[in-house]
Length: 154
Image (cartoon, rainbow, N blue to C red; front, side, top):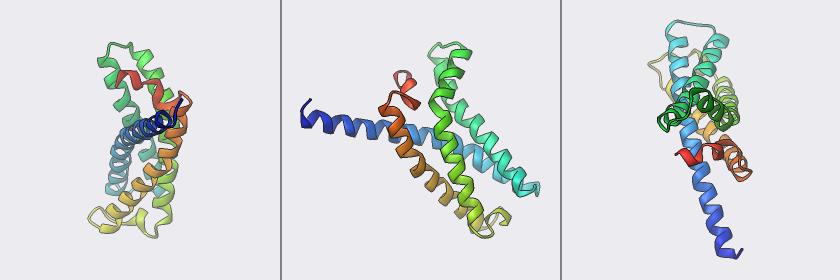
């Protein structure tokens, strides 16, 4: 392989990893934000809010992968297996970082829905989660894992 091909492969890998991370972040963000809103609205304990957010992040994250796979004609079991293979590590990294950041920002877990602290801490946590998962996705895709297992369907 010549240098130009290496450079193009690296650019392609970065683009695919970026796209995969955006895809993963979309599902995680929907679940995370919804979980935090529900937890805040119903005045749930912080641990319960975090647990709800994590569960919803995985549900939405997997759903955002499964639905297009089903539209491509895959069986529900095959789509579910591919979604688990494609997204589990990325979602896990995002959720660890996202919730860690929200916990580390003083007062963020107790801020009301109508505060800049609530929404700002969520925005910062999702930003950090994205950039934490991006290199993980690059590595996984370079090894034929992670989103590489569903890339042919996108």
